[in-house]
Image 1 (cartoon, rainbow, N blue to C red):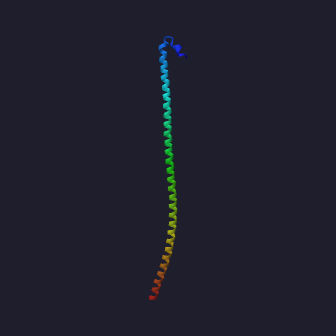
Image 2 (image 1 turned 135 degrees about the vertical axis):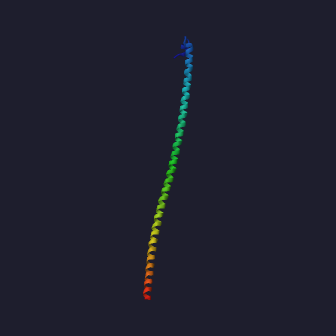
Image 3 (image 1 turned 90 degrees about the vertical axis):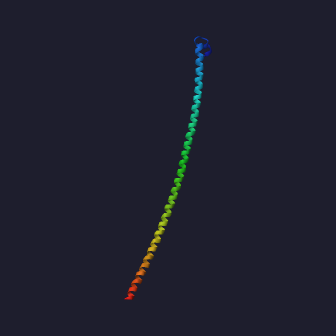
Length: 117
């Protein structure tokens, strides 16, 4: 509308400038509100990206540590199994040797009893 021509008529002389002033203030407030929303959106976006980045870093670090621990456990189990098998074989050899020594001892003892008689 042509506000200049509207202002020239009564009672618009006092009402139109007030309306135009209020409209300008509202438009300025709308602009400031839009800017504030944009800033809030950018801030929130940066915050969310930071949280996601931290979450990814924690996940990757934890995953790496868990994989490393799993590999170490597998290696320990393998070493323990080899050690157990080795000790079992040595124990069987020792048992056979002890059985042989015991047999020899019993033979010597029995031969000693036979010689004494």
